Amino acid sequence: MSKNFDVVVIGGGPGGYIAAIRAAQLGFNTACIDEWKNEKGGPAPGGTCTNVGCIPSKALLQSSEHYEHAGHAFKDHGIDVKGLSLNLPQMLGRKNTVVKQNNDGILYLFKKNKVTFFHGRGSFVKGDANGYEIKVAGAAEESITAKQVIVATGSNARALPGAPFDEELILSNTGALAITEVPKKLGVIGAGVIGLEMGSVWRRLGAEVTVLEALPTFLGAVDEQIAKEAQKLLAKQGLTVNLGVKIGDIKAGKKDVSVDYTDDKGNAQKAVFDKLIVSIGRTPNTTGLNAEAVGLKLDERGFIAVDGDCKTNLPNVWAVGDVVRGPMLAHKAEEEGVAVAERIAGQHGHVNFNTIPWVIYTSPEIAWVGKTEQQLKADGIAYKAGTFPFLANGRARALGDTSGMVKFLADAKTDEILGVHIVGPMASELISEAVVAMEFRASAEDIARICHAHPSLSEATKEAALAVDKRALNF
Ligand code: FAD
Ligand code: NAI
Figure (tube, rainbow, N blue to C red):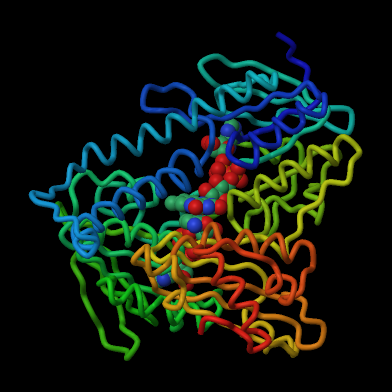
């Protein structure tokens, strides 16, 4: 086996494994190094996303939603469920199977594309514009060389000072996805994406969930109208979110964990939880990379410093995904991975940061692309807005899920779509139409004039586009 490669990718998450496949497709002799281990110590490529992120969280969100629907929503459809009970080991087992299918899928894709996979930790030994030597420390230690290196080492959960993760009582995303008994009282610190998704899972399975959030506004990055609607809907489901809190001491006991905090009125509070999820953001992971050996520059927040093209300060060393600036999203990491491989091949790889969609997989889902109304106001951009509620959509009624709305924001003069925001059923799928439209710089009128299948949720998208010009037909 060749130990000299054209391209070596360090990290096999969505940024890394996709970069490796694209580089191989472009004809480069490519290797990917990933250190993630499955429970047997074997390789488990796919990174945070596959192992303890996107995939297992969506598996549990789906299972817990079925459980909740079977509990009451089915009744409305005329389906009486008797003797409903939760088999949590089966639910967690299914989640693990889904993860393994994805790990195996990536190993298969490496084979198919002739990417050489190394299971172990990759670290820089030395190098310059002529090439880099990289040590792989796995079951055995070996040395490989690369003309080009792509670093895709991802991120780790950020702990609160004085409250390290023990994954028993104080949980990161890893522990939050593997609780073996539904906690009676579950605390969550941080009402961000993980807090709301994991809080939803465990609430649906029967936990009393309290989310403690430092900021005074709920989902501040989301369009205000959509965030307000989502807050209302989540509260109705029984998810308690306390905003504007200041977290004090956190003490893990033998069986529970206590949290001292100050509420939004300045009153001292103490809460005791059976488990506590801390989801206050993530930090870039460069541990073990030995960046110092080659002088790879990090920025003041610990991210690998890159330019707009993902070039680092070193010749022929690139970095993509969570370990560099920008949103920590799997699809952003993938797009950067593809773009870098294409740039190495002398092509014009491109990532449009203005059209990266966001989805929060609560029920209903929250999805958006482009500018929010508050951003447009702050930027002084004249805009028109159109909204359409799912309540007035026939398919949503048939589904029995009429919560939420679609909202369009278009330039007041040109009608170009500037942002689309959805809270409602299947928002994660519906947002793609808006992404395509914005990528092609479409106007709201373009969407309004496109024939959408009936009955479909996507008609709400068309109607919201019509509403920009105050001519929604069904509302
Ligand atoms: P990672 O996926 O973190 O992969 C990095 C890999 O590199 C890991 O396997 C790591 O072990 C390996 N590695 C690190 N250092 C070395 C080294 N020196 N040598 C060898 N290997 C190394 N994003 C979405 O878009 N949609 C979602 O639904 C979503 N859900 C999420 C849910 C949760 C609970 C979490 C925590 C995250 C979620 N994310 C989601 C975010 C998403 O997981 C990340 O944005 C994505 O995984 C980043 O990809 P990456 O390739 O940059 O890094
Ligand atoms: P986040 O950035 O989404 O949310 C963190 C929240 O914690 C914020 O609301 C913040 O104000 C709050 N916070 C920070 N410090 C706090 C403190 N001391 N006390 C109380 N609240 C505090 O981060 P999260 O949820 O940890 O997720 C990390 C990242 O993972 C996300 O930003 C996202 O990029 C990615 N992710 C994406 C998902 C998706 O695409 N569906 C799902 C889950 C994660």
